[in-house]
Image (cartoon, rainbow, N blue to C red; front, top):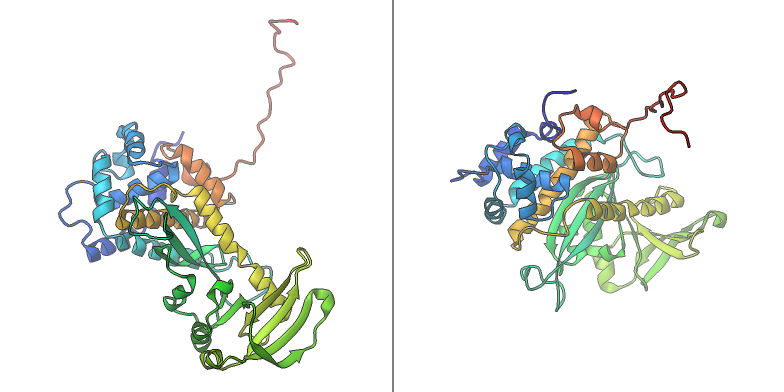
Length: 390
């Protein structure tokens, strides 16, 4: 039997507390605080994520039931729901945003060699998309979306090496996706894969001037003239591979360079897709494969909505909602770091499922999260006395 720290305490050891202390000092997070410091607040919110707590009362009851283990988990005193609610309302959400950014940088270094792409490519590939979380308009009036409901949007730039979010912006539901391109600092040589909702030629030209590449779908209709056609093999699904120039007066001013337009017939669905890119050298099939990899960001949104607590919020203010979302993201990335640091074969889903029911157990973390491949042998009962004969 392992007598030592709980699994939760062992997970928290992977948090860079020195960097976190500097972040808290930057925003004055612990100014005038007597109970529930910022470190304890993060531990509480991470506990809620790992154990699927969905309300302040739920968190308080779960921690109170294990009061004798709280000190060893990093809590100086019992956590009260009113104190946690006040902390989520008043403490700057940028504390958790900056903590998530620190964890993301560390995770991206760890997952540098991993890739979910179906093509061999040395460049970094990002998938950009957004997901909407519906809210009640009467409770979340600061996040208008439609006339009868509110919503927030998670705008995410996903690094396809390890499915780690490189950039996240939380906005109200009315912010159009294309505006997020103004917030990004484009990485020279990287690919940005996005759907046609992000087609804005002025912004795409800014991306091109930064030395980055994009892959997207063309809007219909698209007013452009063919400049050059490359030979294609239609048996591969590539119908045409052309370089084009925009015809519209304003469009041509916004993007005065050549664009590459690829028509591709998907053999699975039978649909014809038109891709746009500013990379002229890659094979057309590689461009099609890059766009297909964009679905990884859709899977990421589906995964976090199913496994993180970001549908039921513990506060109604903008600060409380952003605090909860950023703590959820930080927890997700933290478990990804634990998985990589301990070289675990178990999936991220499996790690979270194990932790959800065993955070109070005093077991070695690497053993608890490792898939048990051993087969238990049944004892030989041939020589046992049969007490009952049927």
